[in-house]
Image 1 (cartoon, one colour):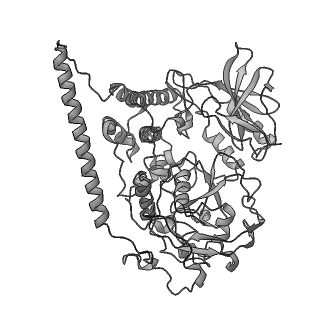
Image 2 (image 1 turned 135 degrees about the vertical axis):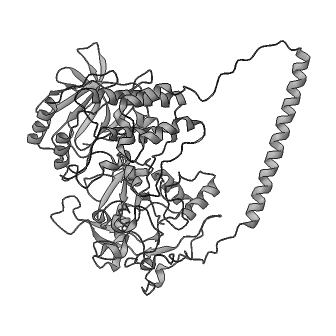
Length: 601
């Protein structure tokens, strides 16, 4: 039976389903190795479960146990091989490194480390002070310096949850024992033996390769990752989206500029995010640079106190208050006049106006105007867009039964399952920048942080979280598609011709992907549509779906979970990801240059 457990109960109070990928093995109050009493499930994945526990032999000290277990991702032989590799790892001692040890319990490895009351870096982005950012930079650089001091070790997957925070706000680095040998074993077990190491959003330019055996993992690569984490900590956004350092491979890409008071970090950030690893500081240099940063952007000014007559004080206070009131009155009136003038002079978009044609510089991407579409796919006459919206075009998808997944029986990652879908209408195009901007104006929201290529009105909007997409869909009187609806529409519904990609067996005809996209998305509707007249359901940008993601059972998401489903592939992921049955997923609060969405109703 699947049980509900409290996740990060002492912080967020959120609940999710217990791991659906593994048999029920562990529970609250269970004692591991006759020593550790489990209290709260903190995290899980296909490899392991992470529990908060009480060390009964050490004055009931709080610890964290990571319990690896046989299941969908492991067999017992590989678990033992994994444990042997871990036992050979020389534990690095350091003031800023999380201490740990592994022990064997019931033929499986268990990692034990201290519990850190402050959570992890993933709880912090966009909500820190200057002193906190300085402390992270210093502690992070010191941890990497300690890691490199001994055997010249390298952290192969620096990301937010690798930094834990104690009650005093200091940062400590974990998971530095996952060497290439261990990573290779994990990759093989995942069914992707050539899977590159690390998380793309934080990887340095030299670390990108189809295979981790061809990537360059030099020590300065950790400096780049730390720079990406620093930028995210300050702004709440990734410097290059999910692309990471590969975004710097184009000459037009540049290091983003920190806002306002954070400018004092800009010189350090630019050194950390250099394209050339030789130009980045080493860990010790970076720690010294962090120590020299001020703890606050506000200089303390000494004021000589003088005595003032109370009557004069009251008079001055009255004058000041009157001046403040007058200032706000004038400011409000000027804002009102400006908005009124803007409203009167802004051209309105006609409900019958279509998206502009592709630019002349891309003749090969001109839409297929000879493709004949059924009359019921062009518009939704009963639909009224909200005030201020840029109109959308809808395609009607008649309901029916279909086989969701890959017809290739050898593909265990995407097996087929029979599904039934009711009729619905879906956006003919991915939601564009212009459409999302109109939503932001109407609802007084901020646009996402601008991508390196800038905002282009008819390109798909990116850097939107799942909640952003959900809010837009709701405002437009629609919703996000379920995975089944998305795949049914991508396959052409009742008109499906069984293509691998949405509308063709030739990826170049229908998709923007790395070989033709130039590391950026393109205007919607500039490739061939599918059988229903829907564009860009293969490639261009990933599209958020409504479902929580679950690998098993295939085709139906759980009622609660950790990640949301993504479909369609993107301009950055190779053509295998653009196949219409391919499934992907990510944290719902992820901001990525790869991810957009379309809506249904």
